[in-house]
Image (cartoon, rainbow, N blue to C red; front, side, top):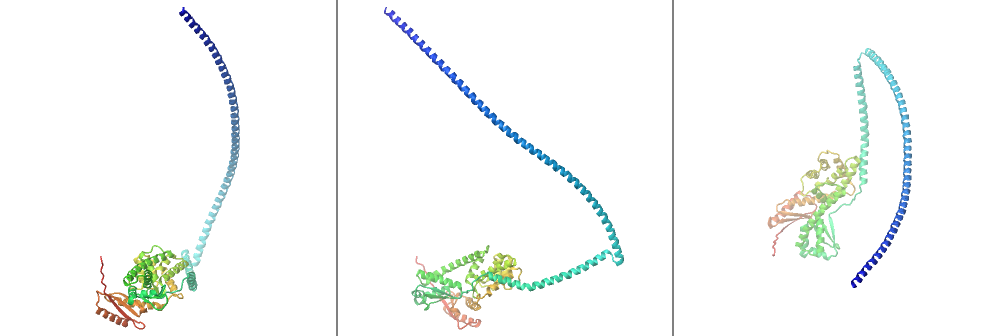
Length: 512
């Protein structure tokens, strides 16, 4: 019984659940139908909208295409009209060309007719000319060739006479104007070159701060001043001149070495013979460097390039040399500038002329005293250092000691004379004085055993330094007598000359 009741309950539950499921199924189906209908409606609306957009797009594209087609058609019509106009102009030109060709053909025919007429007339004229020549030959008794020869000979003689007369006239006019033109060029060159007229002397003044330094320069018993004079070859005058020491000597290089050495010694404060020799040797090297630098600056200032280094060094040495009291470097620079100006006036190469002018006195500054004149020796030096032949000839010929082969040579000769002859340029008395002092030194230096010679006190004293290992005291005394006798016999000089022979013995040792 109980089981039946349970089964009956289960069945009733199953039946009730099925009814509920069916009811829910129906509701779901109805919702799905509504959703589907709504989707269809929305799709239809969307479809209508898209169709409308497509129609509008089609219409706009069609309108745009039609406008493009219209514009292209217009352009084509314009081009077609241009082509028609061009064709018409071509046709017109062609017609004009045909007309011109016809006219040219007619002109050509007329020219040919005229040429034929001229040929006939020429033939007739030749025939008449031949008849006339035959008639003239019969009258004169000469053939045509003989008559031509006589006529040409007569004309030739007449032309030669006229030409010779013209040549003579031109030469006379050139002689009259050449001197005037040469003076104009020289004056113009001088006026265009401004130069100093001051000259150097043979004395250098060394200024000091106080007179106490004079005693230190002199040293104990004069040993410092003697060592300085012996090392430099310059006479050092310490007198009552306030705050000044006078350096006297004819060689500017020695004076410069003495001045610089004295300056360094005074600045350093250590003044004694060993220090003096050390400083003098050091200053000599500095002066040599300064000589090279001066040569380089001179060539750069004048725009001269490619000189051999030895020639550059010789140009620097000109700064410390003089010619008749005129500074040799300034004279050479002045001559170089004058040569350049005059070469331009004459239409020659100014660079070559300036180079020759700078080097023309290079033979005056050799390391050794040459036997040749300075012009020939300078030419030899220029050839040695690969200068061009026209430059070498200008150097060697500026004193007429060799033949002039180029136009540079007379230019250098004239400019050298202009530079030396201007007011205040030279003093011949000074040059003779310096030459006498050099000869005095060279005469003593020629004796064996002599190491150095210095002419001091304006040539009134000659100091001769000999090697202690080469001459004895007795030989040194004899040497002074021999030099005095030779000077007395061979030289001309005012007053008397004192010969001092110095023989030093030095002993050097090193503490290690």
